[in-house]
Length: 192
Image 1 (cartoon, rainbow, N blue to C red):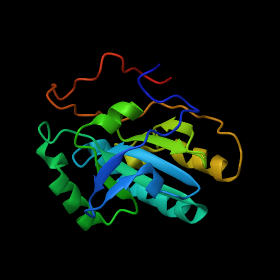
Image 2 (cartoon, helix red, strand yellow):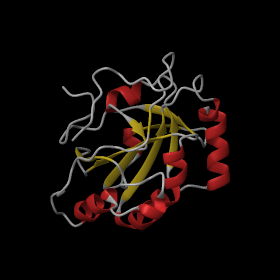
Image 3 (cartoon, rainbow, N blue to C red):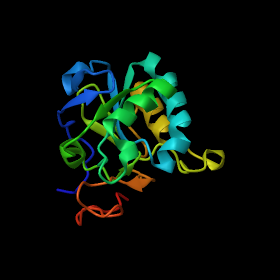
Image 4 (spheres, rainbow, N blue to C red):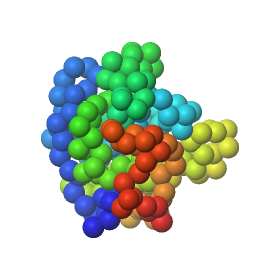
């Protein structure tokens, strides 16, 4: 099995604490479609593309798509990624998604999260239909030429097959606890 979930795989379950103080599992999200994305507070790729992700979430929520952000980064590597700072980020920005804390990093391992941000799109049966980036230039939004996430969601809600189901996520690597900041698991690799 590859490091990252393969297309057609079922979404792994989880029980994670949200910034609202409640715990969430996969069953709590009952919308037709689900976008789970691995994100954080400190990464410039995330910070510079959050507003693009906000627009995508606001566009597709009325079409039955729920967005769930998961922060798996070790606060021991970057203190900015602590749960307390996650709460601050949500209070300041009021992003239209759930923001969950993966303190053990078990969920990042189960999904095979490579970078922040890394997006996973699931259909009604919670099977993976798209994985990878949202946009081709998350660090410099003014240079974006394609929004692969929106393209996949447009096709999904229209009942069409996803024409480009796998792209490489673009961003900082997940910050694994106890490892150097730029370390990635040896089995991690580009998706395409």
